[in-house]
Image 1 (cartoon, rainbow, N blue to C red):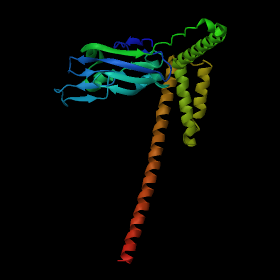
Image 2 (cartoon, rainbow, N blue to C red; image 1 turned 120 degrees about the vertical axis):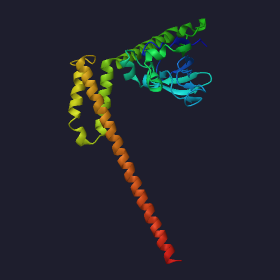
Image 3 (cartoon, rainbow, N blue to C red; image 1 turned 135 degrees about the vertical axis):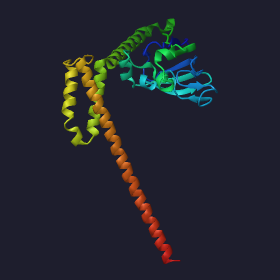
Image 4 (cartoon, helix red, strand yellow; image 1 turned 180 degrees about the vertical axis):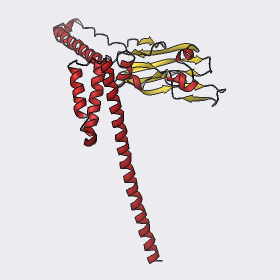
Length: 281
């Protein structure tokens, strides 16, 4: 088996692209120790020393924001400072905002402000240690063809070429999806899907506007990376957030209605039981 590819994760960049297909497992290892508070921080956890305000403990927050970068954590070993995660089809927006393709490893700068009320650069300057590395599976080596297999060489070559072309197409699509235009179209499609499920009274005036925005992006009448494109993206994000909030409110209302109905049925059953008891003492 070929040795994995090892990449050091830099903390002076917002994110680094990890060029692996969906479903690929990566392994992050290593940690830092902060001179500021003595905490030990790896990719997904923070281990606080006994002298900390809350005592010795472990927080499930580390230096890498896996989910927003398009990775889902499958396991973590606090003692070994080892985290395993698989690539998903999510996280494109965070990667695009950092100027890299998805999936990517996003540096969790919030850990400095939220936990320590420090700026990121100030906190980063307190970190000592081996750092964090990510191990990627090595590319599969081409098989060695024995002499007797030569008659099938053309077939094998065709399969290899087909695989190369498929990989090229996948990389092209991935790069396009991660571009500002691809992210804007993805956001538009998401909002359109939500509108199809939303109350038509709310959705009716919004659908034509979203359709017009998608058409303008596809026809390149709006540059996704321009000021106007960013205004469109911000408007779509606000619509998306409002629709999600509306759906949550509607779901909560339905759940409350079901709970109220269940309470009424239980109260009715209890009253019937009390009447039977009084009738047959």
